[in-house]
Length: 461
Image (cartoon, rainbow, N blue to C red):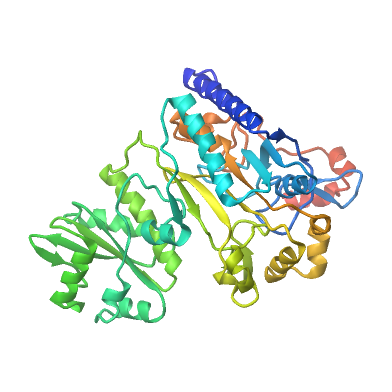
């Protein structure tokens, strides 16, 4: 496979992109500093890959999910501009666009604010596109608040190359006779819709495929209004007056021949996310996505925290070292879910290229965030004591970002999969088809690592 001309071209491009990034950051005064691959497991983030220690029986290293803590400590140490093109590892469920090991362009800077980081990244990305593809990316890149992105596109990484924006119909249907809509709005949920142009004549088979798409994101069902021959055809139209239907059609800016698709859910985020998935589905069906257009976008002000229903506690949306917006930090004591993060994600054509934030640099604020996340003082000090102690020595304000090199090269190469720009990629079952890793190990190796081979073999069966 690697002998194919297309693959040779992709890896030549990857080499060139990596060199351009290094040269660009070197000219900006950054130092490339390597951080440890064998580190300790921490309670936040995705699942770690663990490495048993032979010389410390019963103890484990973790392969880094990112160099987050190390690069923050470099800032404390006076290294004002750090970067690293670094391998990262996450033991999580895999998708077509995800690998268990991946490469990040990792950056951190001291004495900066959000504006300075965004400007630097825009300059670097514009430089890469000009050098590699001869394309000029207009600056500054558009910016969008997280909640606005969710409300308009049903995604925190919206593809803005096409329209089909979502519309909130909650206020229009709150007093309708359709119980599902009325009850959803009364209980604080959302009724969200989009207009699919020219789809009013969809067959039953074509309509039946849509709920399957939405169901993957938790939607319990869909409602439709088909505009054909100047009339509204729908199984639910009998629950609305002609005036209510007219106002809905007007709000949706729908024309004859269009299809209005509606989702109602008490979980507003779930309703928006499911409709966002349908937006992409219709865009592909209708050929609305211009392939050779590049729309970069900054998504700002994510929630700092969210409630994890499985763990029944608050968790960090990005990571627990993200600073809250200064004007909202006091809400940590009274309404933590209302606090927004001083964070930013860089999105290109509906794909997240990377994300970052201004970091917490005061011990009292970091300890408060740990407490809100449910970490006891003892656990916080056990897992992150080295960071908290470092803050006592005077920590400069700092922030950074990490970009996915694999995804960036994939976009620049016009490839359809990350596997086309990674040498020896893993499958969706995290297997290497060349070496057949992971593999069994022999009895002696297990004994050296202080594992009982007999128990190991029993568990294997």
